[in-house]
Image (tube, rainbow, N blue to C red; front, side, top):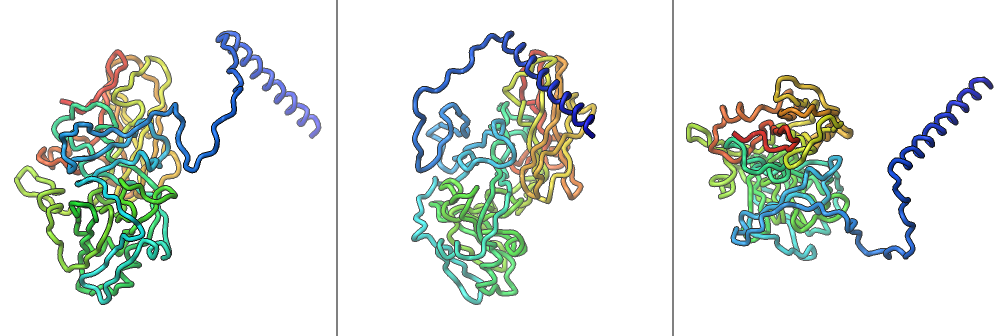
Length: 410
């Protein structure tokens, strides 16, 4: 035992000496002076934290002031985020009539319609009820919509896929509120309406409302941001973003859908035969390589870790595969923990580019057995008349000079 300890100690000291020698060699090669020690006092504490002045990551948004508020949106910089949680300040934004300024002291949620006891809840009253916190993604159904027609002119991942984000949400299950109101057994739908100027609304099946729907007031440990529905929003895990009504003001219990503007002229999927799919709430499995991606440049022969995110509205991501030879072969990527249901899942894949033209892409499979399809297969079934629910494989083209562009472009 004493000899083993002695050998272990000699090995450890030898390893330390080797590292020291390597460090000295490295320092002699670079000949870089050590960083100067700070001579001035640092900044004082502040009432609300801020990021370093050296960090410039920001959401992309259309700065054309002629575009009406109805088309207003911003996109998450997916290529510059880590892990699976999107900072609240970088969560994508989509609204139809601007961001209302609502006072939580006066804002209320009304539940009425086919109920035995209509109720009006204040924000404080909702916060006093038993709460839950869940990590879920939200994705706009129009995310990647420009890819339907053979690849958009955009070539970076933020502009193509930035209408998805993932947060920890805190609030009250809708089922708790509906049971308190005494829902009529004949009720099958609930109309959710926001307090924005357009009174954005969507009809939601009662089954979803009684399952995992939530009225949320918290995001990532603090109150919702105004752009995310402050002080209340509806959260429907795994369903298209527009149904997750922000600035929630009322829930009307009904026995049929309202057939409002947002579910007739909008948010329907026009098929090749002229018919339209309606109430296509669920989001199917999707993945994208976020780094390196469009706009980046590779160096031939250098190690490169491909990383990205995968998500599904129907359960959990069970695998992600990567191709670096235009689909000739596929290999499994590593899923980074945690892997949660209806949440972004981070994946990683080591690679060394050989300097030749190629195409790289990812595809994922979820717990239902569904595998993300190639864009061409999706178009064969759905046509090119829609702009919603595009979960086709995103290809990135690598040119011989290392520059990466949108590989879906015809």
